[in-house]
Structures are given as structure tokens and as C-alpha cells.
Image 1 (cartoon, helix red, strand yellow):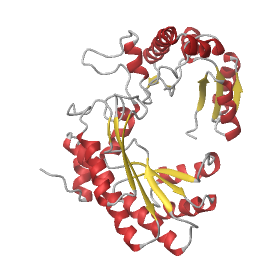
Image 2 (image 1 turned 120 degrees about the horizontal axis):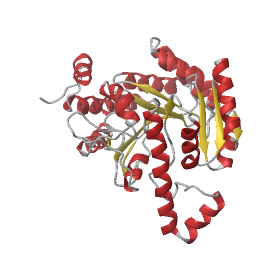
Image 3 (image 1 turned 90 degrees about the vertical axis):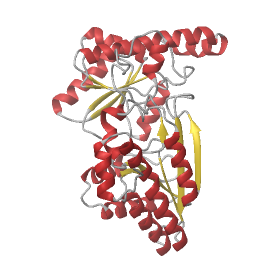
Image 4 (image 1 turned 60 degrees about the horizontal axis):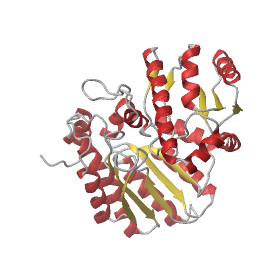
Length: 370
């Protein structure tokens, strides 16, 4: 969707097959040279391509290094935060059996493989690749496995995607906003797609995303959409959704929520709050404030939970959902919740010393103590 040729290494062939059927992946092979041939061809023709390669990243990545292959961009979504979900190098069925019969040996092998995996990523970075962690705690697990993954100041040798790319958006209260059609009717999402594009006609990233998502992202449960909306935009669109429900333009109430990854809802030193300017990476007050504010402002339900992608003990997250049911009473609650939810994120980043957040607060009228 971003115009790249991507090589996705996945150890379980049935998972690639599922993604091929869903339309996320275009080609599947177990032959690395064949996969690289497809990639090179797509680059020559300047055609975006997704290739699923059946293999283990702990083996494929070192092979790529040995072959002199330097990708433009390298990241990873292995569930490394759960060591029992990380498959060590070796024959797949044998590793699955080892997990059941000798978990201690499985764990030892998993850490050995993670170290090799991350060593290869670091070598790709040294050769010029842009490398970033997607937030699955792969770097932390490699450190536990004995690999040096931090510099003298304690920062990771390659960054997480949050400090590398997303934090400026969080400073402005922008984050992933999600809505689901309780009717189960995909037409309702198309109606809401049209409404969000009309609401924010100048947001070219939003328009590009929605147009592509309509054709390339299948619904796998209740029809839903997720978009990045900022402070003020969420409340505005929440009210618009409520009015569409009231008029009967959609067939049932709509659930509005977000990812647990958001501007002011997380304390996660290895992901969302990695490398904060004021060193407040692990301060848990902010998600607790987010949780409390959403509760008293009228969210339909709130949650507070541990883990969130990097594993238990490494993150605290506050979740929020509010239902747009078409009533005037609910519209007031929607405006409150969808204002304070991202607003505490602007405050959190302004408090940490980010000038972007301070400017956003001043421009948008976010009231921040002191």
C-alpha cells in the first residue's frame, strides 16, 4: 500500500496462505532465491509487491546478510514478547514438540535464535538499512539472551517506530481512531468512509488510506475502519457519526474506540513511551489519568490492562470505547470523551517538554495546568 516491494518471512505456511486468500499477500514461496527474484523484478518494473517467504527469520536474516542483501527498510512483527510464541531455528514440527515436552530447552533455543535474528538486523543497519522495532520486544528479548542492544547512554541501537516516526503525531493528539458497525452491514462503513472524507477534505493521508483500504483491507469480523484523527477531529467526527445514526443513514449504533496504542493512554518504555524527552518513559500516571477521565466523561466502557504487544511487565494501557446511539444525550458524552481522550496525550507530551505539543495545546485550546 506504500508502493514498496516487501519480503515477509513467516515460519508457518498456513498463515501465509491465509493472508494470500485475504488479499494481504500476493505471492508465496519457500525458496529464498525465487522470492528475491520476484522482489528484484518488481523493483525494476516499479510495481508494489508483497511476497510471503516460508522460513524462520533467525535463519533467513543471517542468510540475507551473507548474500549481501541490504533492504531499504527492516522491521519485525514476530511475537517475541511471548517467548513461547517465538519459534526457534529448526524443523517446525520438532520445535512444536519440543515446546510441549521440554520447555526449558525450547526457551534456551528461542533466545539463541532471537540473538541471531537481531544480530542480522544490526548488521543490515550497519550496511545502510533503516531499521526499527515494531514494538514486539524483540530487542529486549535479545538483551535477555545476552546480546548488546543498547549504546553507552542506555538507548537501543536501533529505535522503536514510536520515537522514530510517530511521536510528533502523538504530540498533536493524533492517533488511531476506530469505529465498527454494529449492524454488521459493510454498507454502513462505506457511508462512514464518505462522511470522514467529507469532514476532513484537506487530509491527503486520510484520503489515500481510506481509498486503498476500501479495496485492499478485508473485513474479518464486524465491518470496521481505523483512521488516524487528531485532537478536535475525533470529537467532530464522533458527533457526525451520531447524527448519521439518528437519521437512519446507518442501520444501527456505531462503536467508536481506538487502538490501545495512542497519544495519552500508555506507559511503555520499550514502545509508545520509549526515550521520552524528560526521561518519563515508565511513568504510569498518564494512562491512569486517561482511564479516569474517560470513565467520568461518559465512555461506554473503559479498561486498564498490562502487556499490550511488548509483554506483561513492560506496559500499562488504558482502553476506551463509546457507542454512538443517535441520541442527543450521547452526543454530549461523545464530545467530552473524544476531546479528553486525545487531550491528555497533548498534555502528556507538553509536560515532557515537546515544543510541538506545547504549540498544539496553545493553538487548539487544550488547558494544561502550569
